[in-house]
Image 1 (tube, rainbow, N blue to C red):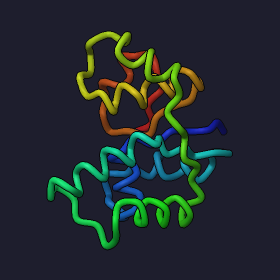
Image 2: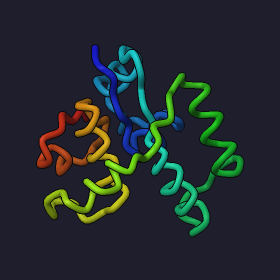
Image 3: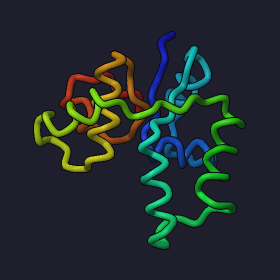
Length: 128
């Protein structure tokens, strides 16, 4: 199997046991040598929490640290190359955080665990 990159929704669904994370996606996470959590997902989660759109049992930092450790995930830092590539991608997807995730997946040539079919329009493999 190959490494995988979880998008923010996939992280939230994995953490909560949400059924929207498919059996195929869960199997890919378990089988992957490395399952990455993009650092930019920390921004998205903290922002949603601050806006009152996401309840967490701890601070976003503590919650993410716990989820990463519990599921054996690896945080993938945002690189300068990703930051430069993200705005150069076609305007299929307007969400800047998703664009950073897509840029990282393209750089590493790995699939993204996501329910968003638009990610495929960038030439990345999607496991949904």
